[in-house]
Each structure stands twice: as structure tokens, then as C-alpha cells.
Amino acid sequence: MTNEIRVATFAGPGARPEIRTVPWPEVPKKAALVRIACCGVCGTDLHILKGHWPKPLPWPFTLGHELSGEIVEIGPELTRDWPGEPLHVGARVMLPPLMPCHACDWCNRYPEQANKCPNPVYYGRYLGFEKPPHLWGGFAEYVYVDLDMLPGTKIYRVPDDMPHRLASLSEPLTSCIRAFERARRAGGFPWGATVVVQGTGPIGILAIAAAQEMGAGRVIAVGAPEKPRLELARRFGADATVDIERHATPEARIAAVREIVGGWGADLVIDCSGHPSAGPEGLEFLRDGGTYVEMGQFTDAGAITTSWHRICAKDVTILGSWGFTANDLPLGIRMLDLARDRYPWYAMQTLFPFGEEGLAEAIDAAMAMRTVKSTVVIAEDLCRE
Image (cartoon, rainbow, N blue to C red; front, top):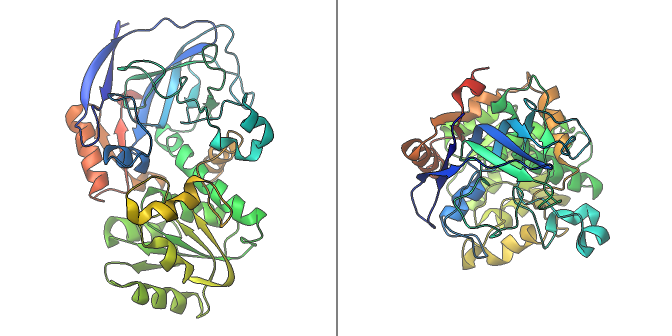
């Protein structure tokens, strides 16, 4: 067993990844060391690297949170995951970012909105808790969690036969499930509803699948480019797509959507795009009395988006939907498990090798929209399923 672990760190916005080595950690009684199989490049990673994160970050640090891996060491008192499933060496797990502490007054008062906890835990530490380089991000060979140090840390076991590439989609899919569930609780997502998904990036593609699994009647996707994104949206079950490059103005896109859905507009529009103009335009996709869910505007990407991104960032009911709660994640894992053969999940993933060059290429491809989901393979032997 090696006594060093390779991790990728970033020095700040716009920085290229740098591979460093850190010592193999000791694993105390309520801790675990997880070998990472693969980790997707999330839109959050891209926003952070563009300098859009609204709060100071402890540069340099390791990005990556759409991960799946296997426990290689575990303390004797860490026996079960958050929902209560048994944990052991060899168990397949995912680790979500920014989990609530479940100890503060906010978490006790507002458990359904605990994802807005003011003291979130990020892979076993508060942001800035320990000086990097560290083992707290998925673009690394291993991730370390310690529930004794920070009890709010969460681990979720995934089915033993679920491939790691599929499991790495559970975190972003869960965000989509929660957004639709918020719309359902508000009466805005009845069975058989017509749904318009704004944006055909990874979240948009996963939202198409989630909408169908949760009872949508028709799904229309609005985005670009045709290849690979709109083409994949149709493969995932979108009844129709609207190309924003061909329909170059908001007026043209609004007319195209309304023609597809029947003239009066859709029952539900969910924004997964992150584009400044998406909100006002998406409202016009709706029928009167319809429901709009904002989950694409979540960072401070500049003055033009500031007012709209607060709808999502504050998780307000317009409907704003920001991330998920700890109780939502098993739903994402379960949906992937049950629907693993119904959608071309792997078609949305473009694989890149772990290393400075491979990780930089994965991020560049995601930023340029040459991929739907750039996924970094950390351990090839774990991803050969």
C-alpha cells in the first residue's frame, strides 16, 4: 500500500489543476477512507473556477463532488450510513457536498429546508476548516470522512451492483427530484403535466428523466447545441426540443414552445440552464396559473443575474429549489437503481483520465459545452463494469 495519495488542487479562479501528494491518513474510530472510482465535473465546479462563488473560498483546494467510490478503511464505530444501511470495507458509497449539520437551531426549526444550514459540512469539514492540500474533494485518489470530528458528515451506500459511473450521477439527479417534488407539494406538478426543461446540460438531461419517472405527460427541452445535447435530450425521452441557436431570440423561442405545447403554455417550467435571460423568458413558456421552478441560478455570476439568482439561492417559493436535503439523496440512488436500464445514462458521460492534463481537458470541454457530463475516471479498475 502506498503511503502517499495524489490529489488535484486549484490555486484560484481560472487556475489549472495541479497534482500534489498528501500522506496516507490514520483512520480513527468514526472515520473512513474512500477510494474514488470516478467524479463528474459539475456546473458548480465551473462556476467556482469562473470566480462566481459569492463567498471566500480556502484556495488552494480540491474540487469535485459528483463522486462514487469504495471504502478501503473504516473505523470500528462507523457502522451505518445516514439512512441506516450497514457500512464495511468494500461497500460502494457516494458522498454529497454541503450537508446540513443537523445540530443547529436552523436545522431543528426548519428540517425541510436544512439544506440552507448556516454551518454546512463539506466532506467532513467546514469550508476552510483545514489547510489544503487535503482529502476533501472528488478529484483525488481518495476522500476522507470523520464523523467524530464533524458529526454532520453524511455517507450514503449505493447498491453493490450499481456501476460507479451510474452512481456518480446520484447527487445531480437528486437535485432534480427535489425540484419536482417542491413543485408537486405546491400543486404545480400534477400527474400527466406538460413540462418544459430550460437547459440541456447535465442537470437538464437528468431533469428530463426525473420528470418522466415522477409522472410527467410530455417533456420539452430548450437548449443547445444539437450535438451532443439536444440529440441526447431526445434519447432520454424529450418529446420535442427547441434549439436556442436556431431560435435566436426570446420571442422566437417562446413562440416555438407554445406551438409545441398547444398555444397556451406548459404546466411546469424548470430552469436548469444558469443563463441570465432564462427566468423572464421561461415565465412566458408557462400557461396562466402554471408553475416555475428556478434551480439553475445559484451563484453570483454578475450583476445581471443577481436578482434572479437569489430566488434559487434563498430556496424561496416561486418556486426556488436549491440543492437537496439529506433525506432526499436515497431517492436519487433508488431512482437510478430502478431506472438503470430505461435511459442511456452512460451516453451523457465523456470520460477523462485523472491527472493535470486529463482534468484540465475535462473542465475545458465542459465549459465549451463539448460534453454533456465530463467525468474524470480516478480508478480505471473500478469503472470497467
